[in-house]
Image (cartoon, rainbow, N blue to C red; front, side, top):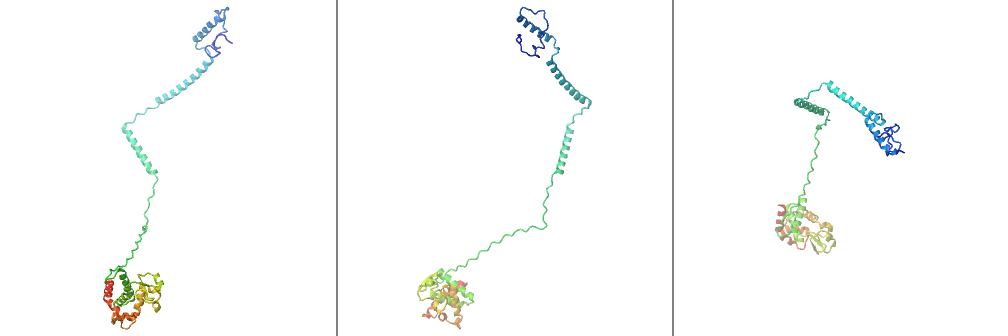
Length: 292
């Protein structure tokens, strides 16, 4: 262990290499080692400063590395300089040349885009035009039956029943005279209302406008099922009842030349044969209104 108070750094200023402790000194005193130690250390340091090129291992390595870096820098600089000197410097282009070059570059780029851009195929029109779906025509609304205004003191139900009598007769091809006889007969028998019978409860299961009690007589013409005119369901239908009456009327010889009351009585066989005549003028007015 040293007694000079310094660290053991062999490459520092106070290292073992820089110190010359083994060199004899004429100044060293044998009396006191502690007094000579500071002077020896200072002398050793001064000698190191006086001879900076003394051989030191650490400084030698640093110098070699620094020299290598400097050499590489000189070589690179010499190459750049040689290139600048050996090659002729090209003059800077004028603004006009710069503009021309830019235009040429833009044109070339545009041409490149046109040639390299994918071509989108255009749809060719078909030879035959496609058939367009025609709109379906709207179904025509069925015409509502004409509602005839009641005449001759009748109400709407009576007028509607008279119309059914006229329509049924025209389907049979019965002339106008036969239509008037049929309407006048219904005026006398049922006052142009479709009657059910209190004696036949079955008749009340069908559309009716009144209920009578004359035996089993039903319908517009008060025809009796028991007399063979038809079933209850048939006779409660105004169309069927009318055609049943007219079918018998047109079979009577000379019916068209008979008085209205006689023609009606020939079919109905009523207990009051003269009662039909009172309805002739009203029946005529009703038939005319329906046929007009």
